[in-house]
Length: 320
Image 1 (cartoon, one colour):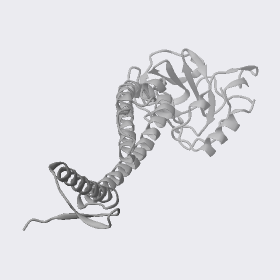
Image 2 (spheres, rainbow, N blue to C red):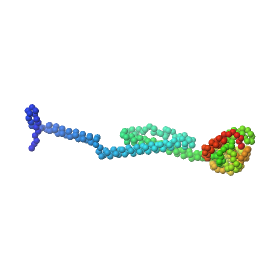
Image 3 (tube, rainbow, N blue to C red):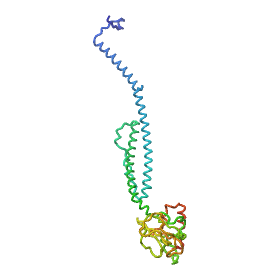
Image 4 (cartoon, rainbow, N blue to C red):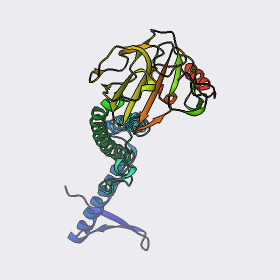
């Protein structure tokens, strides 16, 4: 049995039978379909923006984990950077001062002060910002580490060539338990001539037979510094340094013999132009006598050094 459709006619106040044709039927079908599509789109929009799917929740959790990992990486890079900065500071201000070489330039050590443009295309999300920052830090650290590695290689070569030079610098006291200087460097009264003359070394009073030690590595010279020095030892250390130990009672080394810092070379006496048992000690650099007091720094405390320095300043009569 086919269904019939009626509509109310307000003019005649009666229901009239509707005759359906294909056009009306098509419009009705289109309206029903459009309404269904509209409702479906509304539900999809609500579900997409207000209801998280399990997949979305998984992605959010992974994204948060990624952020935490990148934060951890960034913190570690900051810590590594601090340690590297300390190494660079010691390299510039300690090691290179010791070896008298110029520090690494800032431009060579920090060539990536401007951020790298290859990260500009990344999105502005938090995770990508963190990754971008971490990558830039990693690039800068890699360059700094490479530069620092080359710097340490250079210092190693310098150190190997300067080890001999450091051993050639007179750096210890020629007598053990030496705490005062009887007569210092500079203008002093000569004990024999009784005139104010330039005293080219320091005098250390000590009992006859007290051991005397070489203050640096070198070779006992065959030069004769003069008859006034009595029995003496002159050591050529190389690198423009020489030391003279005069007025000995006897020597313990021979000309041409190699000696090491701290090696016994002779004994205190009063030979030559001397007024008492003592050691006359000189440091000669580039052919000129220099004040030996400024070369005591290895086997001495600050208090002992101050005591020696004060006693060396007195203008008195030298022992030789």
